[in-house]
Image (tube, rainbow, N blue to C red; front, top):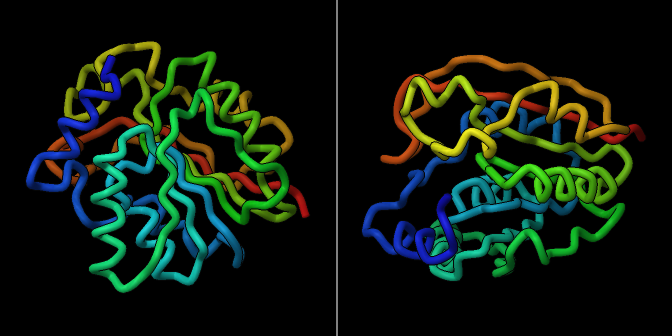
Length: 201
């Protein structure tokens, strides 16, 4: 399992680990996110946070790597926007309840007990009408080997993610294979779960 030091090393490489462009699924569903503040979990070098800030959202980007978030600040500055970076382990970070127009978890692969706790907090964190956006690798990804953790327990299946997000309405909830070309570490045919869920108004 990749630890904090490993992420600092990865994020210090000259090339952005997952590219400059936002996640494709997030791009596809961004119009569903209502105006207001957005929280990006395990945001790394900021590609998704910057994309959402350019759409007019006030964005808080949380990651355990100060190196990654320094790159996120630079990426935001180059795009002419501002994001709020927060260096924190998600095991310790408190998601403020009832305030977020969206909470975004793109390839945020956590140990299952922590993931369940974070997902419960994310449900509580959404304002009425707010959206939760997730894309992650499924267990099928192990056979494809084009990105993501090699530890089976860190991968996610649609049914278990939906079960962890009780109380939300699911607008998209699917497992698919798609071509992912998001930097050198996510590159090729991939097996993913995609979730767009909304807190009832």
